[in-house]
Structures are given as structure tokens and as C-alpha cells.
Length: 318
Ligand code: GAL
Image (cartoon, rainbow, N blue to C red; front, side):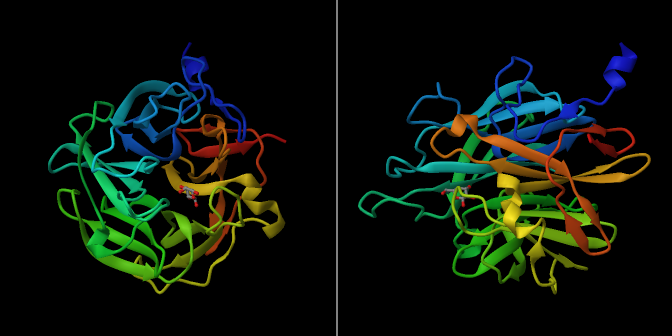
């Protein structure tokens, strides 16, 4: 049993990813929060049997990042602020605030107000809180960070524990916002990266920050790009491709980079969504260990792979 538990399980990019109940994981546009030895994966729950008027966030847990246990639909949100039908809740990300001992969820809230027409016009972030990672979150409010438009959001926790929200501000670029002490607000604009990108993800690796973003092509894949900087405030390098441009990020769009600090090595996982816009519940995930270091970052072609969560070693099957 111990050997079986220790044996790393296989991650299969692009496949159906069954949870402990045998149901495809519903955590699209998601993010990961680590609490002790437990990883929690939060994301858009687009199950076919969800109630039409509500928007859902699901939470799963795992100790090896390959086998996931469904925990709860942690948010079942009814239209919170008199938005038009067709409003959206996308890319939820959960932070843990050690001072207040609250779990704080950020999400992209969008749509329009009555009379404004359709589309993504609100461009706001929503905030919800909970006392436990996988409990029922209470929706608090929505706002525009420091007054700026905010569509795709990403989450970055630095090695010193500081929490940042990455946010796409269509007229201007990518913001890296520092959260307030209680995480319930955006406190400061650390950097505006003037690039037309979304799906923002950042990792701090070997003394350098790497930022990934995707081009603005909606649900369709595009060549995702990366830049580097010594400090979050920049200056940031030019953006370069994370894979050969013709690969179109192997059909995926970035949502997060996750660093695993093991006893032997550190592994950075690229987490991406392979959207299926007309059958969203069947959208797939592309997770692969990145080749990263010395200012270079490369997403290898997807293959089945295993991760030894203790040592940090990733093995790609040949
Ligand atoms: C993408 C974005 C998704 C979703 C989609 C809607 O660009 O990354 O989260 O908003 O557009 O078309």
C-alpha cells in the first residue's frame, strides 16, 4: 500500500480527467492553492446538469496532483448585481489569508447591465470568502481594480508569501496588483506590462520572474508567449513564444504556472485549458512540466507524464 501510494500517478494532457467519482474534472480556467500537503484545485464548473441561471465554482483536492477528489461546488452564484442574462463567472482563483484566516476567492465577473447590450462590458473582479478551503463561499462584491477594466485574472504567490492578482486591462495591458492586507481589495499596481495579452500566469524561478500570456483570440488557441524580469515591477523583457508558433500552444491557453519545490529539484507545471466552446463541460486540460531556467522557458509537446511530488522530478513518457 505504501509503495502504491508513493508511486507517482500519470497526468494525461488532453484526455478526459476523471475525479474520484469517475466524472471529468470541472475546474476550467482554474488555479491551485496549497494548504499544508494538500493541493486544492478551483475552477469553473461547467457541468451539464448545473442550474441554468447560476454560475459555479468547483473545488477538488489532491496530494499528488494527478488523482483528484471532488470536494464541493464551493460557489453557486445567482445573478449577484442585476446583470443581463448571459453574465459570466470565469477563472476563479483562491488565496489564503493567514492574518484573517479566510480563504478569499477572486473571479472574473462580466456581462452587461440591462440596456447596455451584450458582451463582456462589465470587466470586473468578484470577491467571495470562506472559513475553509472547500466550504460554501460567501459572495461579497465586485469592483474594477483601482478603477481599471479587468477581464482574465491570474494569481501569483511569491516565495515570501505576498499575494498578487494578474489582470488583463484591455486598453492598457497586464497589471500585477498587490492585494490589501486582508486580500479583500486590490491595494497597489505593482506593474503594468504593456502587452495585449490575457490568461496571465507568473512564476518565480531561480531568481527570475517569468510571465506567460495568451493572445486575445477568445476560445481559440494561439501561440502563448512569455517575458522575464528580475523584479515584478519590471522592466520586463520582450515576449517570446513558449512553443513553436505553429503548435498554437498545442491547443491550450494558459491559466497558471505551479512551482513544486521538491527534495531533488523544482518543477514548474504549465496549466492550460483546451476549450471546447460548444461543449464546455468537456473542455480538457493541458498540464506539462516546463523546461525553464536562465531566462528561457519552453512548453514541451504534450505527452503522458508523472510527477514525484516529494522529489519534484517529472518524467515524460517516451
Ligand atoms: C478568452 C478568455 C476566456 C473567456 C473567453 C470568452 O479569451 O481567456 O476566459 O473569457 O475568452 O470568449
